[in-house]
Length: 512
Image (tube, rainbow, N blue to C red; front, side, top):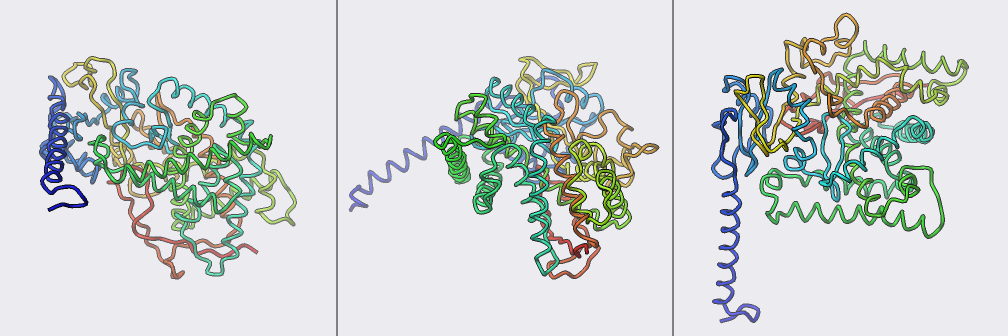
C-alpha cells in the first residue's frame, strides 16, 4: 500500500523521526532554563509545568498583583518559557530599574515583547515607543535619525500638511450624515496618517488606498505577537509566517517608493528623503521607516481616541479645552469673521507645542489610565544587580526585569480616585504625580525618556484642537447615535494600550 508514491511504513517512519526531533528540541530547550539564583526574589507559585507563568501574558496585571501580594518584599521571580524574570515594585527597586546602566532596555524588550519586521520594536516607557534592532550600531543610528527628524525645524516644515490632513479627515466626518464616529477607527487612522507623513513618506500618506493597505499590514503584524512566540521563539508557529508575510509586503511597498524616486530623480520634503539624502543604504532606510512607523502608532493612536471619549464624558473639561483653543487661535488670528478651524491654520509650530497646557494635561491623564502594561529590562552586566542597598535581593545575571506601571499609575496613595480621568491632578497645588519619585512614567524617565514625545504631543494637540473647532457638541453614544454616559473600563490586563472591547462612539454636531 502506498500514499502518493510513498510507502506507509516510510511515511510513518518519517513522522516518527520528525516527532522525535521536535521532542528532543523541546528537551534541549528546557534544559537551558536557568536555575533560581541565590538571592533572587521568591519564586511565584503561579506556574505551569514547562510553560511557566502563562498568566503573565494572558492576565498580566492580575498576575503581577497577586504575586507581589504574596511576596514579603513585593519582588518575585517567575519563568516565561525559559526566560527568568524578576517582577519588581517599591521605590528602591524602581530606582534601580530606571537608573541602572547594567539593566538594558533593548534586550529586555527583544525577548519579552514581539517586534516589527526587520527591527525589534521596543515599547519604551512612553506612548511613542523607541525602536532599535539587535545591533548596538543600528540602535545608535536609529536614535540619531529619529531625534534629527523630530527636531523643531523638521516639525515646522511638516506642520502645514499635518493641519491639512486633520481638516480633510474631519471634513469626512462632517459629510457623514450619521453624525456618529468610532474614534478608535477614525482618529486612529488619522494618527496613522500623521505618523506615516512624519517618519516615513508622503506618497503613502497621500494615497488613501495605499495608506489603508499599509495599516492593514501593520495591524496584521501587531496581532501576530503571541505568548507562545515570545516563550518559544524557535517554534514554527502560524503567527510567525503571518508576521513574516506582512513584513515582506511592507518592505516591498517602501522599496518601490525609494526605487521610484531614484529612477525619476524626484525629491520629496519628508523623512524618507532625509534618510536618502544622508546616503543611508536601502536596508537601513526601510528598517528605520518600519521601526519608526511601528514605534509611533499604537499608543499614540489609542490615546488620541481616548482623550476625545473622556472630554465627551466631562462637559466641564470640554468647555475649558474649547476656551483654550479659541484663545490660542485668536492670539494668532484676530479676525473673528473667520471660523475657529480656519483661524487655527494660522497658529505657528511654537504655539502648537507650548500654548495648550490643558490639552497636554488631558493627554497626560489619558496616558496614565492606559499605561497598564509592564516596562522591561535585562541584566547584561554578567553579575547579579542588587535591588536594594543591603543586597538581600538581586536581579541574577542575564535575567529579565518587569516593572508593572500600574503600581504607580493606579496607586491610590499617589493618585486620588485613580480610576477617574482628571487633568487637574497635575495642576499647581495638587501635582499628585510628585508624591513619589518617578510617580508618573507615561513619558519614560531617567535613562530612557520617550524619544518621540514632542511629536506625540503635537499630533494630539492638533487633533483635539480641530475636533472641538469642528464640532459644537460632542457626546458619548452607541453606534446608532443613542446617547450614553457609560465609558468602557480600561482593561489593565493588556500588554499595551488597546482599543476597548466594549464599543463606544462619539455623537457630534458640526459647528456653523
